[in-house]
Image (cartoon, rainbow, N blue to C red):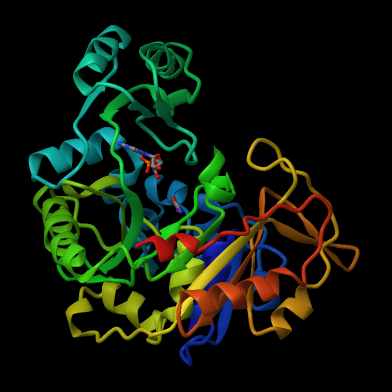
Length: 422
Ligand code: AMP
Ligand code: GLY
């Protein structure tokens, strides 16, 4: 088979890495990819949002399976476009991806189908949104409705901050069209867990649990980022929690999407807060998480091509999906200045030495220039490793990290440590 992966981050490198292990794959392409992906796939210079360019490429090369990493092409309807032309593509339709593309849609769906989530209101009018602030109390959370690359969520400690956040989104259009509506939410406390599931719209097969580390600095300090590391499993996600989340969140949501005539086939990612009142959904994503994927896929024993094909054919119930018992940890190495700016063009050394430790080196913002691999974005690398338990996986991942050097690099030294608090 000829397989095309769409995207250019660490998640897509992990997808290419796992998919290329399938005996079914003869040729792997990635658009646009990065310097690490280029070592295992042919990278083509087509942006993930260039749906016409991707379609033309898939037709020209007779691609047998396209796999979409990021949310933007999904919400733009790439899956519908490929399906119209009879091309096999893995991911939800544009209508189904709205579960990530519109927070109002997701919250209304959860309210209608009793899926546990924070109390909320959704508004297009700033005065109405401000009037609602009193109902949710402080702190509260103000969110732009649409996709904002993780930046559209503002946690507000005071009434003034919350009013300013509403004004930023609705009046000053700080997030453009993504902010034509605002969601105001009750602030939840607890530990966060990511539960990703395979689903063909009927059957739901949960993956192993994982936990992201969103803040830039150790101890969960500093600004929110795209994710500085992940580990799997998350011990706080106990069998008791799983027994609630599977029926009440994952299966209930897939059934709700079907009932709404938006059948969801692809990866359903539930971002959960484990509160004293039980698990509650913070957000849904319509795709694999980054960096969770770099910790979850190394634990997958089954052939990912088989799983994707079963989902496309509506036959997920026939699959037996197997996982390795070992734990996995992914440590993200980021550029200087991230997440506010990103320092580009710094030469990266030690990549081979890191791989020799047994760690898996997933590239994100990298490119090849004059025979060197250089930094080319905020998150540069994700170093993943397995171990018999989280402690060993942490030690193995950091052995890889220690081999790598680039100017102004930053990484957290405490990835996975939260596992020991559970
Ligand atoms: P979201 O994109 O909606 O998941 O929000 C991004 C991050 O903001 C989450 O991972 C949480 O850390 C935080 N967050 C979002 N909603 C809430 C909430 N209702 N209460 C507390 N924290 C939240
Ligand atoms: N790790 C968070 C996300 O992928 O959205």
